[in-house]
Image (cartoon, rainbow, N blue to C red; front, top):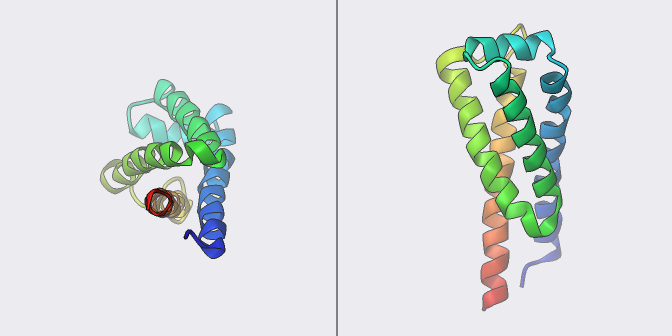
Length: 129
């Protein structure tokens, strides 16, 4: 049986990436200089910044709704794979003097999404037994 502690852990690893993703939307949607600089380096300004913001909003919402959390985690993994790859190969770990904060947040979101996938799959497997 999926334990109460597993349920609490699942809730936490769904909320953390949702908060991180929602918090970064302000910078993307208001064309904050840091966001514009990042997406300019990626040759994706402004359409890439706005599209990424929309996808991150959708991901955050999906993570918060229990029946769609697995889909949100999968989308989060795709988005964070792109973000991490962008930092490693184009932007750099540190961006606009942030001392690597955006890179670390992307890793946190990715790890939480991996945990959501694992726990959701485990919950479904245990339910099917």
